[in-house]
Length: 485
Image (cartoon, rainbow, N blue to C red):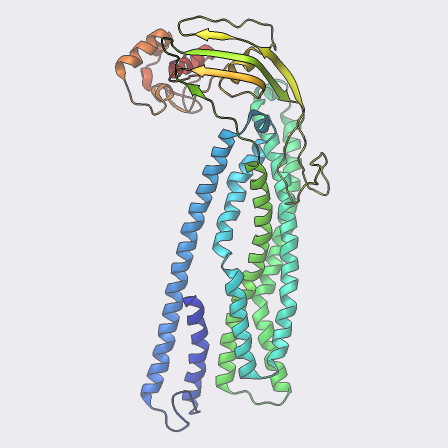
């Protein structure tokens, strides 16, 4: 607000200073009665107004950047936290490309929107008082500039909307490209062994070509819009001065210089208002994608009950049923459109809608009971549901019926495919837990990891993962088992 007040004062003070120099009546003295102190006062006022505008504007921009960075990091955090809480059925239906865009492009748009959002009120306010001052100074010829300004605004808004449409198309191609690259990296060994590099590269190049084509069209339209915004004030000033001269009215220095200053101020709202309008449209798309993600069901919390008196930890199930969806239940929208009331099935004009999931039963009516100290083996053929049963006990698989009861103080789960992070063996075992050397030595011995550590030169300080040595399947299992214990 102080920036707007200081901007408003500068052309007024310039007008008074030019009238002082021309020995015309000012707000402080009549013609022929001016004193040097008046000139110093007007010049000093312009200096104070310019300094106030600069300081307030830079402080405001710094606050917006700080708030935008905080919003971006917060959004990335809550999106990642939501991904960790998602129900197993929902996780299967979201692609890596969609989630990557949410944490990169969409979060960056939120940050950019915060930088520009105040222009929604400040740009029209600036344009309004500038136009009023132009009319008071130039008279009716200023109407030509105002009409031209009114014509330029919808043109720029239309171009900004077109740029937004190309951005939506770019996001669609980016999602497809990231999905393909993610699948390619997961199956890179099969691709190399089958000599499919050329075919995969062709497919990636095709998707990238479509993405670059839409980016190029968006950039050309954006450049044209930017040029139009920069040339707008000059064009408006030329038309206004031309009509004023053609009408036969004299043009004085105080009017000309003040009008030029006002026309320069008129350029700012016209340069940021289309961008702000475009960001509003993009925010609608971003919020729609975020709403779709956050509306997905969370995984139910794992309830860990206290052991019964006189008994230790135990695990039991009652009529447990586990199933997996055979149809996708959700996709992220690319246009911000809403689905119909029935919530089904189709994609229409770029709009992706919800689909009701259909579950395929894997386990049904499972009854198990295991107490502390017992060794329980689950035996079955491939695909019988052994891993699904263990995952359901810790709410990592979709439970469609029955109940699970866990009693104890802590629960550890080692999946069939172990997870190893980039870091040392010690970091993988502890995962930021406090170091208890005696317990660590016992766990290493119990898991048989001491034989592997004897082979590695740095022992528990050996770096594993993408930046370290490659572990065999058994070694990965032993490291994960040590972390579990």
